[in-house]
Image (cartoon, rainbow, N blue to C red; front, side, top):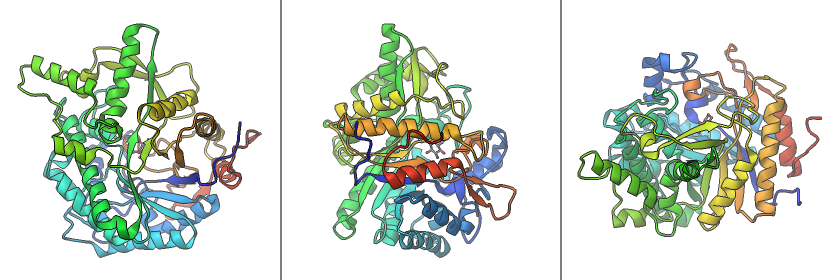
Length: 478
Ligand code: BGC
């Protein structure tokens, strides 16, 4: 097998604003839903922590760029905090200090030979917009389009890769529903109108994404010539047994978990997946409703959304076993989908325990995307695992090596169009409801140090070697 990555394949690494920036109320930044949630729901964060200070990247972004230079990455995927730019979420009121912060970061990246790639929204919604209903408010599409216009205008002369919304499916289900496992909300803002709010939030995010995409094409593309795409969380789901029920459950799980928001953009017909529409509609009518709990897309909306992404960004961490099961509160996203998905108990888990090493599952997913959606350009926008080994994070190296190996196979042998890889993540950061207990970073942060010293782990030298040689060193670490 050809063990080299193609010359134009892009290697980089990622982060997100709330997870690393800190400075939660500095220099005019507004309150985000995560500021509020960590303040009012400490009991729902594993270690009771928050992102008030996090890695202090707002203050020490130069250290981040130094780490990126040491890694020799080609790009850095970071997100912009909406309420640092528009404190209330209102694009008529801009915060100059916030604008300057991202200008400085972008300029320093460019001066360092690193391409800035920007996620416009990675879950830290301005609290004021949440007070208006957040993503369940259809008006959000206007707010998001206006915010995107501000961002394209400010930074589009230098930023040529845009990711609109990070993981709208997970954000909808975890923030506007609940976690299947323990029935708790997992993410801010904790709106639980089960079976309704999850779908509404996903629907509005999908429309908001499409509006931002069309806006860029109409008002910015001719001058800026950038690429705009969505980032979907895409685990793979394989049947837990040979039973036909489980085989069908795995298909259904993939439909609900991945295709719900992929199909409207990347299929030739557009719209939500027919299977999902059918299931939710039938259940809704049986519940005595007059219409489906899954909002309908109009013919115009279907057209607006179809094709609204220059590439498919996917965040992939693992593969789960899916079994047919009547689960979850009724109605709810999980009850509609009717599956139970669990990590394979027989596979190696580097850390945390929701991640199992299933590289073949990733290969299968990549080929499924290629075959089902006409081989779109795929950008792997997140992939990685945590560690418990501090500096000598061998398991993390093993994870990345094995996953990169199947990506190479997908490109070179199977003909999948994969254009880039963004490892997750640059720094140990605030891992949402897991607080600081999960350590995905290639750089360790000393959270007791006021300067938050960044120290490379062994994975950093491994990744640098991959980027330098554009191939995988199978002997490393020996
Ligand atoms: C999110 C990241 C998060 C990672 C690991 C992804 O779903 O986009 O923000 O840190 O998972 O939990």
